[in-house]
Image (cartoon, rainbow, N blue to C red; front, top):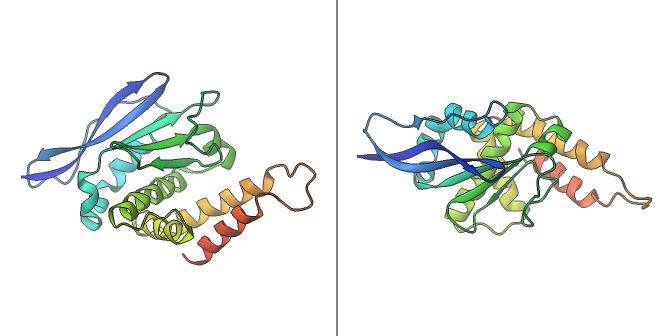
Length: 196
């Protein structure tokens, strides 16, 4: 028997949750997709539908991962562990891993679906880094995760997403400070883009 992902719908309070769980499937199936969700809540499910076969072939260690995608709406209380300036963020401290999708930040950054898919793949890169014992949270891990996104979705998509994140941080107010308080973040994004 072959074990792989299956997607199911799950509602949690005021957020839509997507749970990717492993299930035993017939050997000729790489992926089973069965999710019905709200029209505006499809990024994680569309990503899985489009890239699951590629992920299963290139990164078989992800087959056994349980991932819960949580869409946070504008005006919702954002959990303390989630950075509101990050469109996607994964918490790998407990299983299932929680992948946060911040709709307001996605809209502010004007991210396309393909750019969002690249950022979701980047977050899966953090799961792979944890599996490999390389989850130090430093720039090297970010570059590794970018490489996974490049491999799964494409170089142009992750580069474009990084460009939009740079533009977003450049647009944030400096509160009269002589230097942009986000300069280090912007420099980090520029270094990551250069290494793609």
